[in-house]
Length: 350
Image (tube, rainbow, N blue to C red; front, side):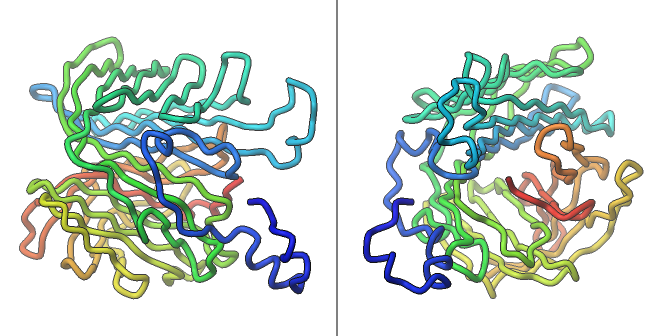
């Protein structure tokens, strides 16, 4: 963010506290579907579930972009000014197994890039591209291939205060954040050489920021749930080392478009049953009671083993997987994804 001249007269501490605060902004589309290369961190997340006759899958396609501050003044075209990472995962529900792959490259040379103006993110032969009406995710991983179309069925959902989403007690801990829930999914999944024609639902999150994590934050718990009645539920919390909540938020948008935004003191995550990872030894709560102003819900992982080891790209080990949403009577009312970070190790965002 460009400094205005009068900021030079402010005390150093005040300048520090304001340097990365994000102001309210009017998000405009399709421009803000695209990349924001002046921001430090950005990601596009697509999570969903799809069915092919007797088989059911959960899937995640994620592209990250990171601006490398120390290389911005370099003149060499080989300088790594922007890095692009990608994660892909496929949950085979009947097979009780998660498949995962990852990639990383510097932007340029027709290898990796994130276009401005609209969603067009690519890393070698992996891509997430938006055209009129929706997205297409295409990637060939080591053990599986995804070629999925995700068509918009509802308007963009601006999270937080009209797209400005606080992530901590200080104003600089914030992101610009929108979601596209209730995406209609069609396409193909190839697993171990066998092709499945699928249909289902997906959820897209797009965030960009200068700084997200408070120094006391070790990770977060997050859900994005497509409800069967057409509603969309988001809830999250940032955690301290002792497991207490540092910040929280979320929203519920009804099928009719009525939006209820949750404040930081209105969302609680209470862990239930846990699963111990044989890989990282981390203990993940794979069942939760999530209380919001819109009601109290139970979140249950469809299968426990949905941990992703991304140390070869982003450096993190985290749990993210297909989960069911239950109402107070134990009836399934939705399905989506649960993400748990900072359990195997403290989460650090580059």
